[in-house]
Amino acid sequence: MTTGRMIRTATASMRMRRTRTTAHLSPDPDRLAMRVWIVLPAYNEAANLPVVIRRFRELTEEAVRLEIRVIVVDDGSTDDTGPAAVSAAGPLPLEVIRHEPNRGLAQTFMRGMTEATARTGPGDIVVCMDADNSHIPGQIPRMVQEIQEGRDVVIASRYQRGAVIRGVPWIRRVLSRGMAILFRVIYPIQGVRDYSCGYRAYRAELLKSALAVRPDQLFAADGFACMVGMLLHLERHDAVFGEVPLVLRYDQKQGASKMKVGLTVFRTLRVLMRERLRPR
Image 1 (cartoon, rainbow, N blue to C red):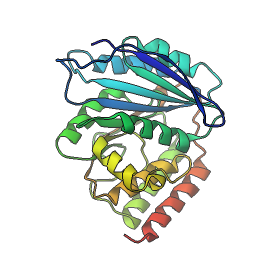
Image 2: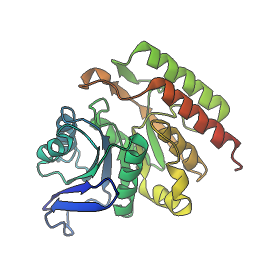
Image 3: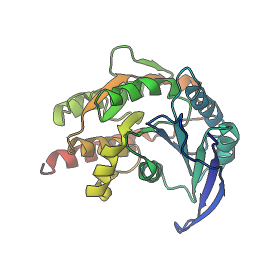
């Protein structure tokens, strides 16, 4: 199959000017019935993205043979995040959507997820993960398998047996563990122990259904809290959840963390209480 790459840029007024490099993506008799759409929110990740994208290319090879499409949402980066992604893609179908100026994780995540969902077909899966090389693309086949076995959302969880965490400061690990326990007490969801990890696989039909009903609610949270808000919203759509053990490699990423811990905790608790008090 001939593959292509597309580059999209956006102005600050949200009017899009598109520059694309494309190739013919005609039906292929060897095409798998399912495509995996990868969403990568990215801010100043020029040093990390090439490694991540090369690992995606490995997943398309014969041993694994996933059909992958990548959408990078460049949130007003001041480095070469977009060009670095395109350069690393090679034959992998990849598109860069640029926000200008920086709009924050919530809007970047929302843009990538809505763009990917709009392009999915029957049986497709949408995966969102960090672009900083701390999430391992090699876990995607296992997450895809869980979706194929009947789950709607699969979370790479820090709290499943077999999870590996490297390079995360101890204070963040303590806070994350405490928040996870609080979530399970206040808003228990069957099959979920890790409410805030953004490395997830979603059945595309579920996302389309949720967006069709209340698109303003699916991503109704700021910063990293949007991950929790989306999970709680999908629970209202009777989603079937599951988890796989996360391998989190903060020791492999280049650059400092962009999370503001105190603000993230406040926003997350606000989302949790709002959803807990919302009539079902």
